[in-house]
Length: 323
Ligand SMILES: C[S@@+](CC[C@H](N)C(=O)[O-])C[C@H]1O[C@@H](n2cnc3c(N)ncnc32)[C@H](O)[C@@H]1O
Image (cartoon, rainbow, N blue to C red):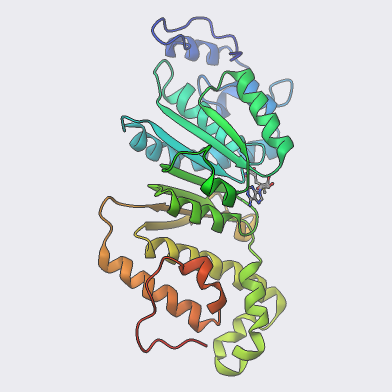
């Protein structure tokens, strides 16, 4: 493992000792010290082009790193919780791209927060672009990140792939394209994920259905003004997609929090959806969300998307109208 040549290792684990990591950190260039954590892999950050070859951080990379740190703040407590289980945890990152989220999570959790300890867990990156998967495999091997794997699969294929365990503890999807976030939710439901951390990308499907049923609904409901103009249709489509995703999660027993990733500079793409399923979900709240979900789909003329958002939800209540 080539991690900044740490000066000494913990004999029991073979990993760099915390003292050695802090000393190595103190010896780094001043600019880097502010942004990086003691023990973080400089080589990884260079490979991910977050640091330049000279170990410097440019403005774009600083923003990206800030985004991942912010996300890590939410994910670390979840990892600590699932890490306590005897069988070890599994995290699946969907639409992984270059897997910078998976790699940085791994580095911060396995190598920084738990330096010198044995961590029983595994991170899987799921990505359709074969060349990115291959690059990630090579990088993980070179860095000695042994508890990481990369699967050249779509999210849908991953749901039934034998390369993944039958249950997964945490699902992440950071800007997974279009409906890949929805597939990630379906994956999480099928794999009984305890936590899902989702930062959706734009989704065109709902806007497309709104557009189709526009003529129909404009006459019926004055709120259809919300999607009369194409730009509004797109934005309202994005907004309502995330509302439906949250209701879908709640309709399956999850407790959902929605917050901002960092700033709102990328408009609709900075919504962070955090969903956790308690051991005993609140039955009344779950039922209420199932009903609400059906109602929203019906009110907005999105009945054809029932399979996507409400497949597992209860049948509509008697008397509930559909358009
Ligand atoms: C915008 S990139 C985000 C990558 C990474 N999560 C990040 O935030 O840097 C979206 C990635 O999702 C992948 N992707 C799109 N649809 C997918 C699907 N259905 N299954 C798996 N990966 C998918 C794309 O190939 C692309 O690499």
